[in-house]
Amino acid sequence: MINGNQKGKAGERELAAELRERGFAARRAQQYSGTDGSQDIKHDLPGVHLECKRVERLNVLNAYLQAQRDAQAGGLMPVVAHRCNRSPWLVTLSLDDFLQLVRGEDLLA
Image (cartoon, rainbow, N blue to C red):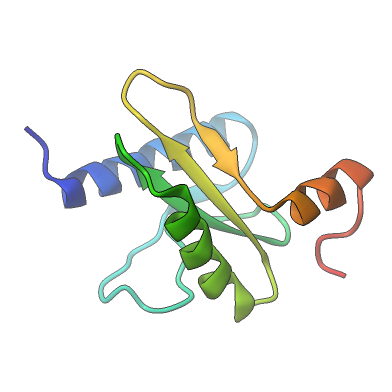
């Protein structure tokens, strides 16, 4: 059985690979001390702070609030990418941010 820490790292590598397959630069970030504001994955998604969660039971609100806190420093859009076993990757973001994306508004504005 894989422990939670190892599963989290594996999930970060898996998500980074998924992003690369779709044409984005992405790799697992090296997080030695859980520095506030540090992203799980270094990527080139413009204007996005990406929090990765690879768990069977996710408290989505807590995960989103963590992403929101970490995203504030850089003025980025908080996004949580999450997946359970045998399930696709899902993304959680606020309704306001979702509508901003749908409208094609500049994320960096």
